[in-house]
Image 1: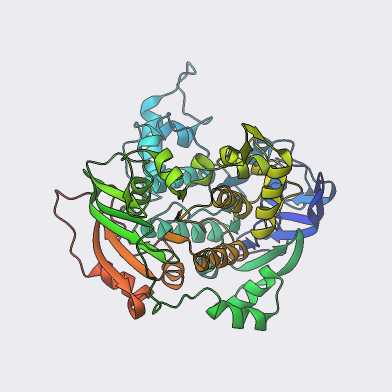
Image 2: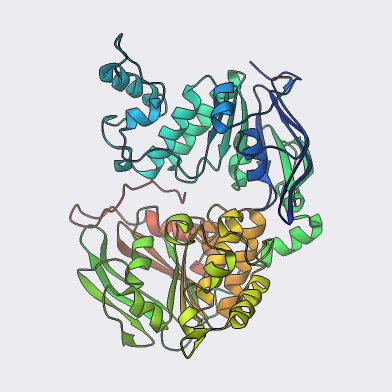
Length: 526
């Protein structure tokens, strides 16, 4: 259908204030019918706040919101959705205990003449809709029994199957397999052809250049740039997001985070895993990390990377194997023993396994280290304030104050708060599971630089990342896993993206008796 000149959804000079913070400062944004418009910026730039104004979660303090050519004010998210604005969030907001069909058609279930839900029609309709998105499953089963990627596709299908005029996608590919990403892109192109406006939020630049027509860059709550994406060089886009000169990004980006792979860490391992085995999950996995060394765990999703980190931490039962810290074996299956020995884990899912959302930044940072801060059983507020201030400064955590709720921070800043919590424990070894997932380019660069700095101070780091470039640039050695077993180790000049992929590809799938915690994703790192 193409685009028209009249925006379907528009923000004109929108301002939104919170106590001590101006989240949006006269921001303008417009998406046209039949256009895919990228909304990008560092965490804390204002993207989430703008989306919440579009969807009726917040009301603006200034400016005007317009929808389909007329002034608009949505009282609630339901009001926005009924008006034709659908949102797909990074964190799936469905009901895990309900069936797939009920989740898909919740509030719109077909009913018979007595007003009772017609289950036969509901299941048939759910199967028909989901098949169009590449999801073929028993729609009667509970949603929680599906993989995260399939759940995300159900959420996508639910959002689009209503009569939407605008679809807002907030990091929609974070849980998807490569095949599912291609299906999503096909859906987006279909929406564009049908004249539906798509607002696409993602930190993955490859995706933006594949599917988006225009881009708006937010920085520090203001509109930094709006224009066509075609012809905008990637480094230009990054420089707009970071607010830095293009020359600085060019010179800094290529070398700032690359480690010297030829340098070999010496000394005894600070942490060592030997023969970690759990039926159907891990098979004889061994990995060691020396002081000042960053060891990457490579492999496809489901290869056993997160499970290895949890096993080292004592958070997953094992059938056999042992973990040693500074040469001394740890009691198997005891997280507290691992923490006391100096091992800390930054989990992949910071919301479910990391931050305590109702507590402040200050409370989240010192949560694990309170016993070590006590003197005679009493913890000094002054000492806590000193520790919190030091880590907020060191990690450049952006918050209105240490007493701000951590749930109000951007994703990147929440990640830094978690990192501060474990660094406050003064660990010997730090296990990082996807430390930059879901955070923007600027916050990602800061976290990568911090990992480099921590290793330089003698900390041993185990780094898990699905981003092959990040893994290759940030690791001294890489242990490659496949289906729960070690299939290769790279060091020196071998530590490259190509080396990781070749190590995975050169090994045939293990026999049916070996672990298979999740389905193989193909030869991709997403």
